[in-house]
Length: 308
Image 1 (cartoon, rainbow, N blue to C red):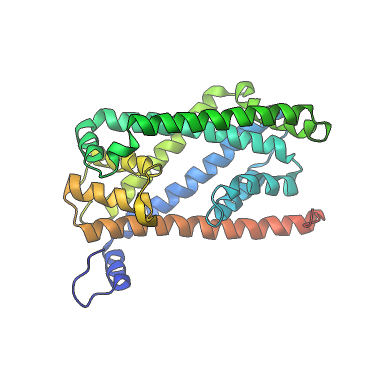
Image 2 (cartoon, rainbow, N blue to C red):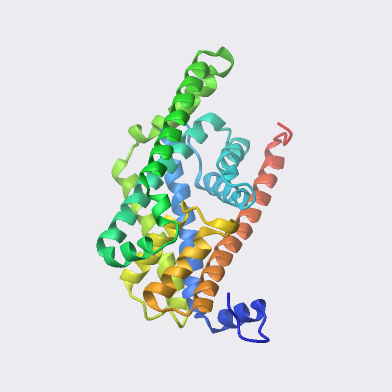
């Protein structure tokens, strides 16, 4: 971030924050919490076909606790939410974890569709942006694709061997069956249309969160829906982009897209992304901590042994 002489980074970020439209940022916060609540409802829908009913309270507390753990241990929250749900509702971990995996697959499908829509609408901008990246040739080269395919095949083969061993081992047979039941829940939904509808709504809310943040800052407030789609697509692609120096790809590519495609000043673009990420992190941290404390109170009330 390039700052003017004598200006500190914290001072600049505070200035950008003070100038931002707090109503739009409040809308983003409310939208984020609604999306989390809908994810809890969707999780309930996946658990129901397995013969396990979770209340909204239990699924929401477990979900937010998992989100908080993800801030410290990447993807560690996926198993944490299943463990928390077991502690407060008794739903077996293998079953709930299987539904979590299914949920992630559904999210990937929706994400790919949304990225596809973004590229279809804003192809010229996104194509020129990706083509101009210094590492784009390496990422999409035939050799890279071959290595990725080879690695995926190897992982799939090893996973298949492990799964066969798991199913034959008496000690883990029940775990494998529970996990498989959770995975298969997507095919036994009571209301498939309701599940799809909630999924669309969740991802629509994610898009709206990006829209609210774009509108909250002076240098981006004039951008339209197409620009929001572009920023959303760049941010999604950034998650898989290999950048040198350990720099977060999202925090690098999204500001770069705002600068090169929409002429947003670099410092303001970086500040926008930093504040957006920080606000999302704060939401998950506070909501996750409150959820964990409530869960621990439920543990105590129900006489759950926390060492198990």
